[in-house]
Structures are given as C-alpha cells and as structure tokens.
Image (cartoon, rainbow, N blue to C red; front, side, top):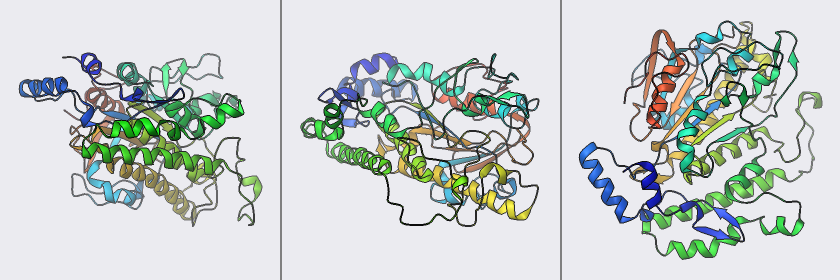
Length: 460
C-alpha cells in the first residue's frame, strides 16, 4: 500500500472543521486513523518493520546570517559526551534531541564574494552565477523545494517560506553581485527563487483562514477563526479518544494564543519611554509587521510549529534576516551595534564578545522552537520526534567569510532515524550536501546525488 492509497483512506483532517467558508487544519489524531489503515500498518510492519500510517516526517531549514565566533561554538569533544560551548548552552534542555555537526563544507562557495555566493546556495550547494541581476542562477533547486515536490501532494501547502525582511534588489557595486541573492535560500529552479512571506498575519491567514478582502464586514467575520469552528470542534471532540481530546484542546488553545499574539503585535503602542539608541540605528517598522524583532521571530517560529502540527505542510524554510543584515541587536544586554558590523570583528575582543552574544541569542530561538515541538504529543512520541529542523549559517567565521566548517545544528529524530545527542565532527572536505542527501532519504526522496554530495552523511 503506497502513501497516496493510505492518504485516500484517511479522513481529511484539514477539512473536518468548517465554518463560514473558513478552514482549520487539525493535528495528527490517532483516533482519526481508520481501522483499515491500522490493519494495513500492522501487516506492513510485520513484513518490512515499518508502519505506513505513522506520523509523517517534516523538515525545516532555518538560516541566520553572518556566521559565528567558532571558538565559542564548536565543542572540543565528539560523540555523546561533548560539553556545550557558550553559544550552544541554550540547547541544554533538548541536547539529546540535537545533532551538532561540524566540519561540513561548501566548496562551490569559495570562488564567489564574501556573502551573496554563499547565501544563495545554502540549500543548493551549487555554484552561484556572478551577475548584476539579468541572469541569476543559484546552481540548482534547493533541498526544501525538492522535498516539497515529493511531499507537497499530501498537504494543502507544498511548502512554507518565511522571513523577517523584504527582498532587496539592486547591485552591490563593491562585489558586482545582485543583492537579490542575499534575500533567498529557497529556489524552485536555478533561476527562480521562491517568494518568502514576512507578514505573520498573512501567514496565519494562509494556514488557517481566508485573506482580508478589504470588506470590513468580512474582515470582522474572519477575525477570530475559532469562533466559527468551535461548534464543529466540540462535535468532533466527542468522537475522539481521551488522549486525542486533550491533544485537540491543546491545539485549539495554541492557535488562539498565536492569533492573539499577532493581534497584539500589530497594535500601536504608546511611546512613554526614551529609546536607548538613536532613531537612525533602528530599522523602521512596516505596516503589518511587528515592530519588535524578537516578537516577529517568535511568532514566525510558532507558525511553523502549527503548520507542522496540523500537517498543513511538511516542508518549511525561514530566514532570520537577509544576508549582509545590519539588524541592530542593542536589545541584548552587552550588545550595542549591528550584526553585520560586529561579525567583522577584526579579532577585537569587544566586538567578538558582542558577536558571540548574538550567536547565542539565535540558538536560544532555535532551542525554543524545539521545546515547543517536543511538548506536543504525536503518535507514540512527540512532534519533535517526527521532525528534522536544520539551523545554520552560510559560512563559519564572519570576519573570514569562510564557507568551510559551517555551523550546523539538526534538531529532531526524523521518525527515530537520526542519532541525536551527539557532536559529529567530519574530517577532510566533507560536503554539506552529504547531510542533505541523508535528509532527503528520510523524507522518502531517493536521489543518487544532490548538489556536490559524495555520499550520505548519516546512514538510515
């Protein structure tokens, strides 16, 4: 029995709850799996050792710009007994669910400039064409979009691409590259980047409801999606087992909580305080975008969790910021400057300390997402058990722009197939794409090669 046949037997969880034309996806519910699928699962497991109706594997690719201070990132020890470094300390609570991967390289980034030729191919691994914008090429399709081609047929959204900053066009005259390369990591083809959404309100509407049409009456009708589906939710709840009743209550609470956070973030706030930095140093807020960068990141990551929880999509990517981002991090104690400037630390201790604090903050956001995924029960384990969350940057040290020994973390167990809780240090010139082949394999995408890969990094 193939995946398409199995999906045809399953109730359409994404369309069970309907109200006023709105749609609400539901989490994976054991009670909703028909007995025919359970019987098929048992038979398949007896023959192959694999259960076909188990929760699907999801994959996310989260990018942060400007590299890391390697001495505070890379553990000295390998294996499961490694000690967390200052930058990695935030993953302590989920350390057993994370792989720390070092020694992975992107050889096709050596010939380009410091930034653009490294960001555009973060998920392709192929050479980036030097161009001012007329003939762009990332070298190939990105891994997330290859996954989406396979898994997208089973979900309402083939993939979800998120960011916090708009696409920047034009030419960086210092290096002769289009700035477009610094705004994208997802590529549908070598010449076609995938548009990312930076407005969390629009992401929410895309996942859980209809867009604002400009009609005040309709806008008010869709303002609180759960108000329209609550009756159907309660009706379905009576047909679920006790564990699934708890799971659905928890899920509905999560959706409402994110909805409220988005509404709160969009409200204008009274400014009864004096800023600690100059106005020129602050990036202006855009309509519909949370003014607080920390809240913007938190909401976007919560939306990814909800997207995976509801099986609205099984593939997502997110850029914390565009490449060469000058995002000001003065909201962190001990930091007083922009990210890009501090990454060019020139081996000056004062800059290195601030650079490392930014690295640590990025890891805190990653760890927070993993904790939320781990708190959600799914099947015999947790949602995190059925995920692969890759977190990394397109080069190692920001001062050197080195595309080797990339800072890569991989959270989740991919259905129990990843040897998490370790630091795996690759030796020699090991392509990052070796990891991508391993991830594709766990998503059911069989490839002989991806990018510049040589062999899978992690065996099944």
